[in-house]
Image (cartoon, rainbow, N blue to C red; front, side, top):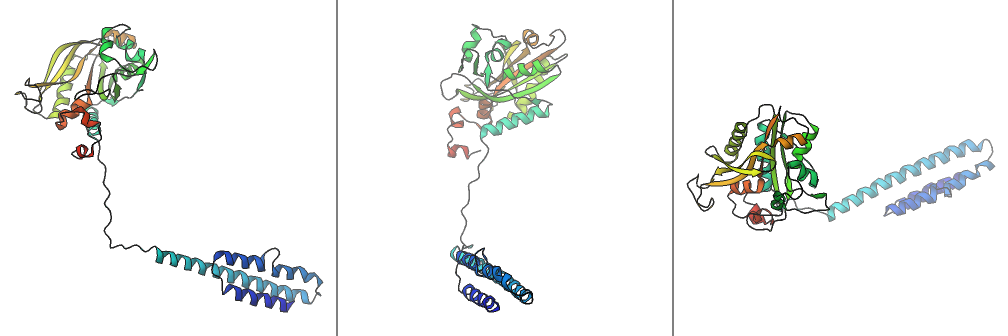
Amino acid sequence: MKEQLNNIKDSAQKELSNIKSIQELEDIRIKFLGKKGELTSVLRGMGALSAEERPVIGQLANEVRAFLENEIENAKMELVRRERSSALEKEVIDVTIPGKRKNLGKRHPLSMVMDEIKNIFIGMGYEIAEGPEIELDYYNFEALNIPQGHPARDTQDTFYINQNMLLRTQTSPVQIRIMEKSQPPIKIICPGRVYRSDAVDATHSPIFHQVEGLVVDKGVTMGDLVGTLEVFAKSIFGENTKIRLRPHHFPFTEPSAEVDVSCWTCGGKGCRVCKNEGWIEILGAGMVHPKVLKICGIDPEVYSGFAFGLGVERTAMGRFNIDDLRHLYENDVRFLKQF
């Protein structure tokens, strides 16, 4: 049996010296150390040995087992080293070859202007409020004092999902939702996408972006609204910008006004951009209608407020002197690289 053990050791050592793969190594391990391996077969026959021979053969068997396990592990490490070295030789990277420069993206001009508007109003103490783009007819129209059949709905024709659900035409519904849940003081802006059934042209799109603002508190006046809009206009269009309010009608504000800014191209002298008027309309505004406050559970005898809404696309066109709104949606890289 001692001779058998020495033969197993020599045979395994010889086979290990010629292996070329991990699979061959595994086959050798099973052959000698597996459940039906040669060393295991020898150990099963130890029961036939005398009491004097058993410890001697047992010690030798353990030495052979330890030797084989150590040799197999060393062989495995050597195979892994060879494979890694071979892979490195085949996959040589020439670090002297110039790399390919990746083009970095930039923020879209609409995102730039939206963030700029947000920062201006955040600086004045406003909080940002958001709401669903798929809106209920109640919040989009009725709670804003635009009941069924009201002519104001014609100017805000939109995309209906059913009779009671639609794609919002303005971010004003967010104001209603906030007023329903909160008591004054309220000071928020509501940025987001809105939808109207408009044909696409140089100044219209069925999808566009708005930022609406709302302030409700005791003693809020039209003067506060004018001051706020002046600060905004000077911040985004330049310190020399002036604003002008023209009487208008919105069902959800009273009094209401269209707000113009002095032309950013000619400074108010008159040019092609402002159609020689010197002024460009950018937003609508007014004092929150008492009926709207009542609908939201706010007492108009105690509180008053103002609201305003501006189009981000039109503001971006003025900010970057863009003459066609469609450029903002066509994803022409030549156009977008300018910003």
